[in-house]
Length: 193
Image (cartoon, rainbow, N blue to C red; front, side):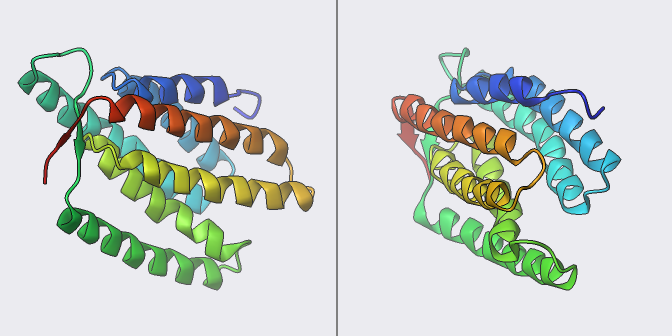
């Protein structure tokens, strides 16, 4: 399990997501499944919870995108939507609550970089929910996730962390993909509250 490099599969998944293709969820299941197994194998409890959430959300996303695609004239890719301020406020409030819970657990467990690390799950959850329901603003949140990841892994490089350079490079690729996704999705966006 430790020898398998899932990063090329993750990169392909990100490209499919940015393209608005329903097949992105197959690649998401594969990527999150492998990452979940690696987390279980390495006893990384926080990562197990994170990847478990993303794994389940692949099924939810498939159903939501399939429903939306069947209602659109163009069935090849999802029509991006803009989120209203009220719904975004509720989602951000939920993310803040999750952040507080994760931060408390991380401090109790004496984790590393607890303030940055604790933001990964709530930001990722927020971005995944927005992606699942086809909202353009997911890409802004993914950029925040990627910025936090870049900072975390840069700090790990400085501390001599194992595998940190590879993860830092992966975060750079994810950041470029978020800009690419934002560009593609902004061309096909409609307003919906």
